[in-house]
Length: 128
Image 1 (spheres, rainbow, N blue to C red):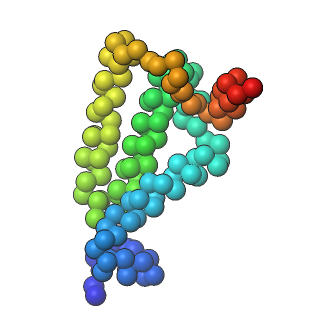
Image 2 (tube, rainbow, N blue to C red):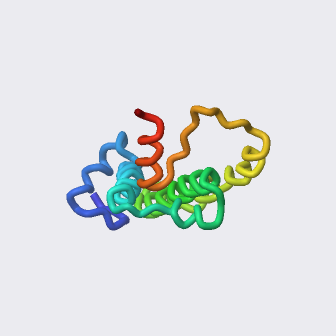
């Protein structure tokens, strides 16, 4: 079968099995946060410098998710043409954040996780 993209040869069998459409997207989309988690890279550290912790956490998770979506979509031949739409659709809900911050009451049980040091401190404070 002729292939119109640059999948590694050992992965071409995935194209013939329709049930695994989006496999590359799912794989890349999951591996990016895993690499970030295990490498200690955190966009929240940068965002905490310019905002409060809650908003930094919200924007950080959305931004990191959208970046992972974009990279994964551009690498997946089935979703490459949708990459820009995925990014726009992922960023658009951020418009609601200022309104939610102002008008939505947060639960006292809600946890906003930041970088690794914050998580360690949070866990130490809440579990005696």
